[in-house]
Image (tube, rainbow, N blue to C red; front, side):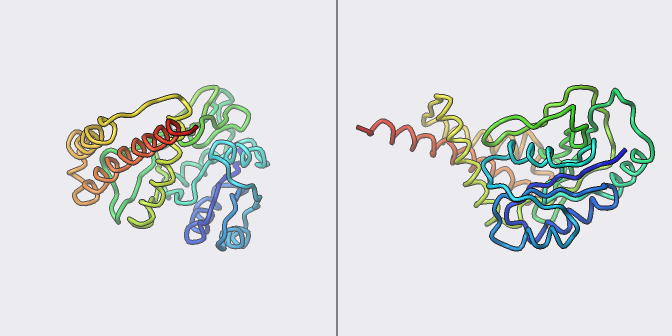
Length: 254
């Protein structure tokens, strides 16, 4: 069993080497597709032994499928630049690579453990279990704008070892990325003909906070849990306000 790790990047010079090094011990090839970084991401990725392709970023789905198409081996491990293969997962992957898996298995899923504000988050974001190791001829990324997902044709088996996710660098990074994602989400709703009202940017954000902080147990994660709930509410408000803005602009066009 031979594995290609595929990573897409955009200005990840502070994280890409760690991601590559975590996968190198269990993967036969590292493929990085860069979306137009203006920092040293490409240089550092090549220096760490990755095969780097450059493709202007248009969306996550085509970028990831482009990376898959450049992989040389039949199995692909999809890894983000802010993720690391844990020691437990690496041990499992080594056992898999020692012998070819059952031909009926199309993919393997495993949990993702997210660290936020210096703490492992054990509620709301825990554990995220998704297929991330797959046969390249049995799976393809699908979806647009924000919510891309892996569509697998065949049986999915479960691994126990986690991938470690070191999300937002800091609050400023989170705010910048939420601005980006909320804009894309608003465009998606606008293109689908959806409308918004006062409920979308007043009551719904409050409900989102309560759902994350109380119902989802975010309060058990202490301060980071509160921030996650507050930021989630902010994101909901932001995307509905942006949609409201788009609808208003359309209504005043001659």
